[in-house]
Length: 223
Image 1 (cartoon, rainbow, N blue to C red):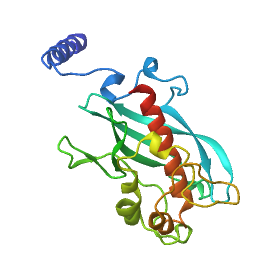
Image 2: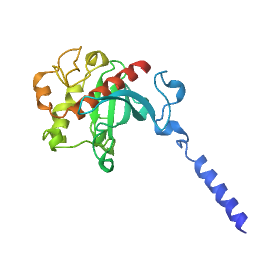
Image 3: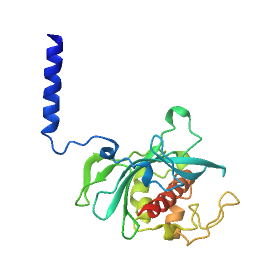
Image 4: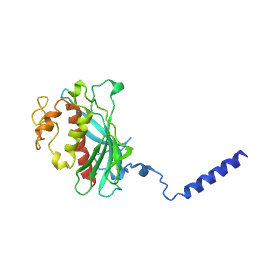
């Protein structure tokens, strides 16, 4: 009797799946990139590795990987990414959260069109109810020079909208001078007001900048 019930359940399940023409099975349903599509520099794992050089608050660099959790290129004109990375290495382990950024980069012009650490964006360019990102850094704390997340959202991230890999070429610190006595930019200057507003938030700003540089390079290597 038990075997009969299991057989009937199996038949019902198969028929149910057969009736759903849009049923999707496999990694492609999750927006995971296949290994064949990856440039040689990037490696597969629990999310594709996007190498970047982390810069901590004392001026020490460490080779690290951001993780590409999602890449969806079926959208018309742009690619959707979810990228997670560690910005701060000095916090206690129980609060050392990773940032996850929801990112959209245009295919034809290879520039950034959307940055969000909260909701994703729907087909009309409006915030959807799906939460695509998470801000793991400090907000308004002493180590951030009282710079709040809302300030990042309204003043810092918008600076990157419309930027390409060429625009960010040569930029590796959020400064127009010398940082930590040795780090300078060889690219174009960042506008002074934006630099000054976030001068005390170097861990968040420098590592976000470096991750965006690598993401734009990754995007251009494929699209």
